[in-house]
Length: 538
Image (cartoon, rainbow, N blue to C red; front, side, top):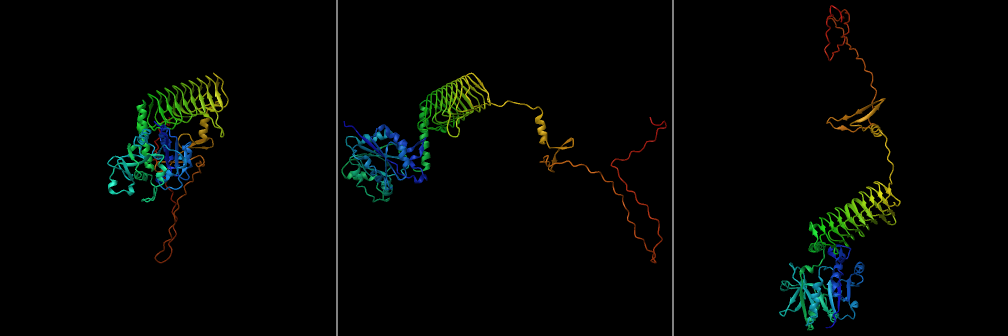
């Protein structure tokens, strides 16, 4: 049997207009990997001799993402047939089978592509084999017209189909396997006399049939052939892929407490008897060994967790982190490029950056490895069985020796010897009674404001009619000296004007009335004097 050769053309020049994005459509990610990378990964088992990616203008980012595979430019978007023609130079001299796949269809499996190639290499050697599907909603897919002999007669685009053809449920996925010796001769005869004025790749079926060559179809599950053209379709594709990854993880022996809240990357690896709590996110490059536990609300990326280790809850492992067997990373701990030895512990509120923590060492709550000086990153080394007290700062580069103890609240700037005690904090002093005097000087003793007057201190509170207290302070309240009380002024009586007699003469002047003495009423009745005892006072 002659050796079979395979090449692949990946069409990736679509702009993603409906996605409203500056990023090329095929570079949008699913499970942490660009969708075109999923396509290339599914082609890998087929050992293609050549893979050519067709891109549009300004899509250099795709070229970088697909390297070392070749790229070629479709200068104008004139249809799928025109796009494949752009690969002519890259496939010069190739006479094997050419696969046509799409960069925005990430779910097509290697097995399905293998079946497509197997049909192309069957005894009747069809010139073109098309991958068909029967979606629940055929919508505007092109229809595959199959003859009574089961062979493919033509592919009719939805816009050009009549009512009878639109009633066909077998639809075109766009994926094909084509005889490489015929490919470009067929494409050179494709015209653009259609509703869109484009050069359709699908027209090669009718042209090949006209030449007397056989064409056929292989059916595949519709969920493998989903194309992504909008943000909503991208989200739906992500949901499909996450459900597959969750099912795979549980099938392989991991426990997911709440599967729908766990999100995997395309390359996440979980061992047996791993327990994953709710709301855990795995970024790319994570490996978790047997019997480890990842508690709720953790985020891991580029990290390795050894057997029996425990992470979280609410922990973050950044790239380069390695957690040893039975080691513990607790709540609100972040580790970046850190290596924790077996049995090491950092249980609370800690940052470990560019650090090595020896086996059995304990890192207390609030510890920080200060690894960045504004220009470069530096390393911190904590020896086996060392103990770092709470709220310590280890200023890298620095080493703490095996079995050493760093006192809580220390700032360590120099290396610490093995089995030594290191303290890097100010000495405590105490001033008796100082706090009370300070509060009194600030007017904060109890409720109200304390105001001084001479050698006396008063507490003043001003209350509004509604009972609320008016804010006051020593600067706004003063005690004024009392003014002496004034004696009451005597009452005066205005004299009456002199009366006139009937004959007009003034009457004889009488003596003026004595001035009235004002009566002062006492609030308490006056006490009556008791008669003196006949025997006198005793």
